[in-house]
Amino acid sequence: MGRRSVGSTRSPRTSRARLAALVSGSALVLLGTAGCASDTELGRLGYPEPVTEQGPTLLQFWQGAWIAALAVGVLTWGLIFWAIIVYRRRTGEGAPIQTRYNLPIEILYTVAPAIMIGALFVFTAKDQAEIMKLTPDQKNTVEVVGFKWNWGFNYTTDNAFETGSPNRVAELWLPVNERTRFQLVSPDVIHSFWVPSFLFKMDVVPGRLNQFELTPNKIGTFEGKCAELCGTYHSDMLFTVHVVSREDYDKHIAALKANGQSGKLESGRIVTTGDAGGSTSNSGDAGTSTGASS
Image (cartoon, rainbow, N blue to C red; front, side, top):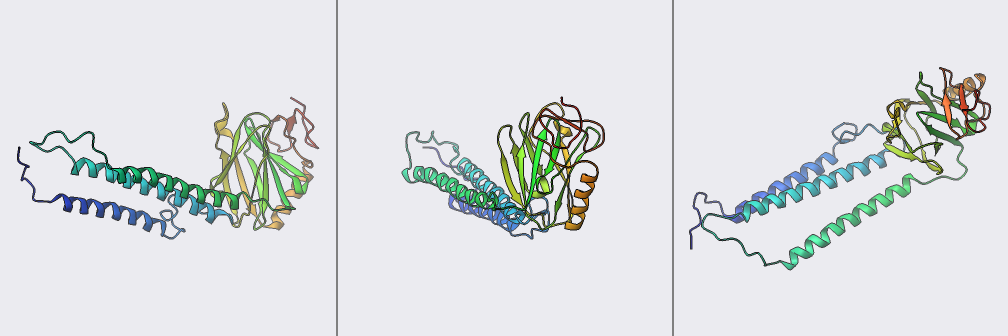
């Protein structure tokens, strides 16, 4: 029998204790990051500051998801390196036994992932049910029409519309502190309606009505874009969201109507031309929008 190298006096128990302390310390750092003030970029884990009433719920959900993923990653890599170091083959020792198994360990690595997945499912289902809840008799409704390669917005409640053009980014105006329902439709391919500051996105699918509700609670201008690769000019599918006071919102709707943009854009294929928001063409009826059918 060969002798074990005496190059180090550190016992296996000491090594394991130090490794356990390292893993525990990493987990505490992650949990401490989660507890940081959410008004800092570090505390938000890089996410933008929420600008809707639903934002804190969404932010906490994504923070929890990332922290759980990082904790599992740290634990997994810690156990891998622990096994590599503690059970490494040493000089003079033969190969380890290849047929031995440990029933408690096998139960642990079968049950533990199931528990983690179940916990993630419960929290996801809970937050999703809250965020996707639709209120009856919603007063403010906006129909979002995503098409190749721009956006149209029908202010259904106010009987007005606007859309972007090749020379002008589409604009969406919303009243602050008022819950708004978004109804997403597409006449061609799948798009995705995404406003990063809303911490939320949803696909715009042809032949399917997807909808959700949010309450913007911070006045400002926010960028939006298509988050689904939809073709040649996907990168041009940008829009701007203006969250304004009710007074400014009403003035904007009045200006749209004065510009001839009453009625709505139908979800038929829309082709924008020129700079005017009302210069459009549709394969179907287009309310009071102008332009020739394509």
